[in-house]
Length: 219
Ligand code: BG6
Ligand code: MG
Image (cartoon, rainbow, N blue to C red; front, side, top):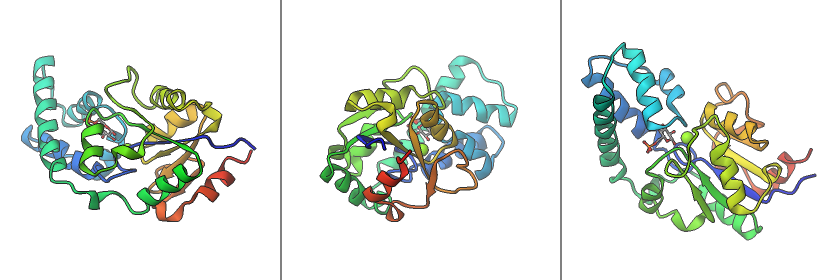
């Protein structure tokens, strides 16, 4: 049995439900450009960088923009998103997350963030969770987005753990694929119908514990 030395967490939709704010802000952008998209389509945007998300959305709406226009719209979207983020409080941390992170620390397991977001530190500060993390790897550090494993491999390295000693927590299909591509165990957070490639899926951290973590990595 491989010992778990580090847990790597996605941010949006795992630590805190910013996924709903991303959806609202992207939808506003689409609406202002004259079209709409569904919550089902939104699943494809989870875990994907800001500019890649914009490309997908423009494609859905059949809208063509110049590079300059794309940057301007992405900036607008981020401003709308940040307006929502700035209203967040520590109460929005998802159920069971602080307790689980505290129990990891008590068991000597390292904790890293592995997020595509360039806003991750701001959000962690806002919800008063910055101090829980031994390492933060986010959209400002990576050159390849999920499903490439880069963000999680960097997280493993920053915590001194081998990929096989890491467990990743993810709400996005692309994020689960990134974890698996990196040779790590993946715990899906959300729906088992969507996160089919995860080793197990939990609805909330209230369903999970350090004891279950050891069991998960037994092979
Ligand atoms: C990911 C989200 O965590 O971060 C995506 O799941 C988002 O929806 C991406 O597009 C980039 O975030 P940001 O905050 O840099 O726009
Ligand atoms: Mg996510």
